[in-house]
Amino acid sequence: MTARELADRFGVSRRTVVRMVGEERAAYEGRSRQRRDQIVELHRQGRVCQTSGSVP
Image (cartoon, rainbow, N blue to C red; front, side, top):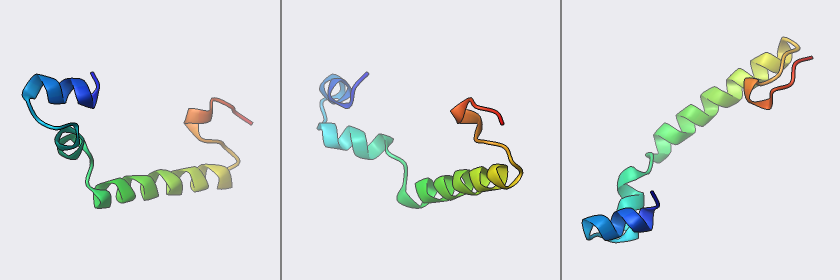
């Protein structure tokens, strides 16, 4: 369901839906940093990220 559809359904603006569902910046940055660190470690081990689907 899109933000517009939710907004229409609940009688609020699309921006309100986006803001309420959105992730806080600090949480996003922490999760992003953790994912990046994991990828770097996998590369150091000669492996690749699981999401790429390729294996050396």
